[in-house]
Image: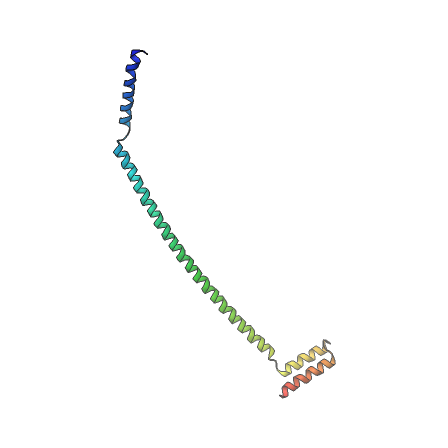
Length: 134
């Protein structure tokens, strides 16, 4: 080893150390940045959690409202179907309550079209006339 090399090594090391100390922040500053970053993370995470809870609560409320609306719609459809069924039943009852004259005319029409035989026509005619006398 040369004597100049041994002297230059501590100088380089010393200059490098001084340059690092000058270029870097002190330890308390680094820790302060970390502490602030940790606080921000906790605050942001807490706000996100609170926001998520609020979002879940509002979503649950929206789901309940939608379920209530669909139940009301189903009830309205059920009521409309019941009214429609009542109207159809009333119409069928009105259609079935023909007068004996209408029944006889329909029976005569069926006989004229040769859809029923003469014996069927006579038995049905007697039945209608017997109901008329009762």
